[in-house]
Image 1 (cartoon, rainbow, N blue to C red):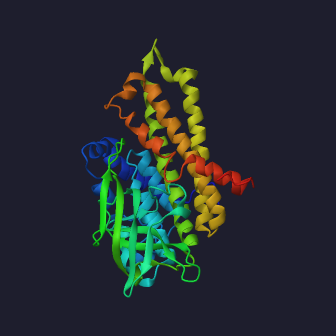
Image 2 (spheres, rainbow, N blue to C red):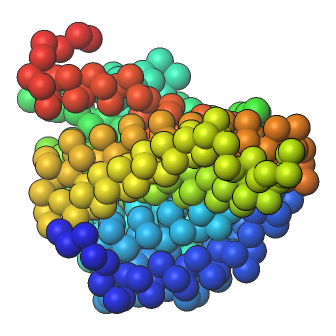
Image 3 (cartoon, helix red, strand yellow):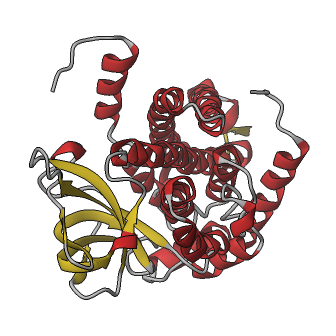
Length: 385
């Protein structure tokens, strides 16, 4: 990989940043607090080709990769408009379908995912499985016409705006009787599909839901890819998820750092800008360093993934997500501290970033599970769970 972005990517970064600033954090925050959505921004980004930069050109995408989509996610976040569904719809769902879907599935879903007119959610987490995705119990059984899917999922983003959800279920192996993972595209308006909003203490336009699947009848073509290869297909979608979660967190960190830096340059006490004092200057400088390190690891993960190195991308994507989540928390906390009392006001819009940043240490995979991964796979230490 080159440490110098191509002219095309620099231009992509600029135009996406311009679009994000056109809307800005005040607009984003109003949408979130009023219970509204970011549909206007989402559709404009789709129309301009930004949402589908990672998807194949023959289906309306830009023909790029995760490195390109991560730029979109980062720049929108840095402009104050972090779009959570970017982590899900074109990233996880679009990638899985473009890599493993049938021609019919690609033609049906990818154009809409690319231009933003279709949003697809992703459902893996369950109440009794949590981080242990090997213990999910959502089960698909064969029927004469296809599949019957039954189970329950939690903390599923964007079901209210999604036309379909990519569900991680399990099928029974006829030879062994054991359950094995499989991926299904489920329309959100299908009979037997219900979802209920989970009230969150987050200021976000993207809502979280519990999803209930009660004997949902699906056609054969709802299955994505091969039953036998579903675990590898799943991880092929989770690596982009971690890359885009990193972009989401880095964007928030940049936005918070920019607000704090601008404030301490102007705010004067004892006739001196408070940014001249090392008590504020050094923490902000540390955050800038940590932010750049997190971005480098994210770019490495994206480059490895786009080069087809799924295993290498897995390690880098986990490390990037860890680093990005940590710096997002530090950046938002220091922004509040730098602004003092103003940091807690709605006028400056800094405190509202704290909970969103804090969530990036938990989702889509917790920092503890990443540390487990690095200990086991990178260092070769014994498995602790």
